[in-house]
Image (cartoon, rainbow over all chains, first blue to last red; front, side):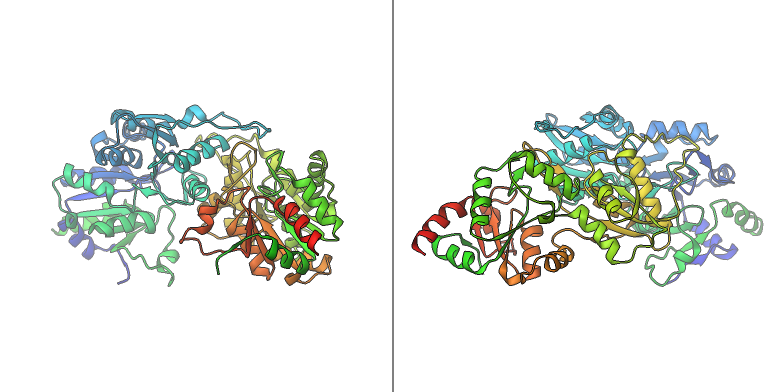
Length: 302
Length: 302
């Protein structure tokens, strides 16, 4: 079934049946470090109507506490408990799979991943500390790797370099049973407001190891298990709001949530309606602030 | 049919029917900067018997003239005309496809690619000159790209960084008709004698652009067209000698050559004989120098 534009009539159905709104952040709440127009009012309206708000981001660059700071700096109140980042999901995946305490994790990504792993009691290294390690391929060049690395976690990494690619590849290829975990597989993301940036470090490691990772971010339903444990809401009473069809909307659909696509991020209306697109959200709107206007109509009539 | 170990009887058949031996370099002639034992004697023996020698390498780091220098420094005589590198293939592919003279090429890879493009009269940039370009993802960070880039050529690049990934991605995503060319798709390669190194920059660009490249190196038969034009030998009278099943041996088979796998590089005998392997060369040997001993037996009896 093709998507419906959000209208007064279907918004009332949606609003009445949903207890919790799950928001993607990049392209929905902000672009890079710029807030999308009308967001504070929208979130305030939803809170005032008793709706639960949950923020689910695939961007693993930051930890939950770093995201809470970002929300605050943009003038939005969101507690750490409302935030589910793929950096946190990576740590929870390892905990859920009884990652041996004597093993270590090598990180290709930001210090948000390292922070979440540390909070989960897991020893990790890599990330920012390897940003300046250069490789000079002279005759005796050799990267020695730690045989106790039992998982390599790969997220977006603007400090990617050949040393990190080699280190991660060696652990995955040579350490028996070493896990290969991707925080997400977004091709690109709005790391800044002006431009999208590649999120393709995972693809590079797939290329060099010839292996596919376990993906813990959207559209994998792994994070949903934690949401369900934490918030006492059934999936049918949740609405996933996002700007990406292949991560956000698919994530919502995989879990049995209602889905709302916003056109404030990467997906255009023509891409949504292109015959080649086979992911159809229940509804679509320009931005989440469309809900503010609709709520005035609906709540007045109510 | 499963592969036969090279023996006095089948070596005679091979030797008598083959006019030209095509050699992969990495894992066959050398590992990194170290010559594999017995190589000079083997090449000398083949030349003395009137065989043509052709060196076909997927490693795009160097140009043909840089490879000729490498052969010389290792004490082997090989002329530039006998060398076919994937850096050269990239340039020849663009020439063959009438790359417009007003367009430019962006290179993620070594200066060997830039040199071959320049020799072909094509304007190219990127490569080593972008090695130290750092990205600081602050609010107004923006990479501006040249709209006249009509092709991005990606090879192995130990100086890979986020700037290069972004630049190549922008050209492919935003310049209409921009070609995406991979010199090769080897997962890893012996860039040094002691260790294999990732060759996965192409996979990264596939990840960020969601596009597949045109591959000009092995196992694509593109290079074979040039070999056939240059050397007056039919494919059935050629033998491709390599250490990789999915590039070298497949390349030889795709072109209708005889094929010889050597176990001096990445492929082990157990990998060759594993039931999951479906690429079977005609013959296999430990190193190319096995041919020297066999030639003594065969040529004495002859």
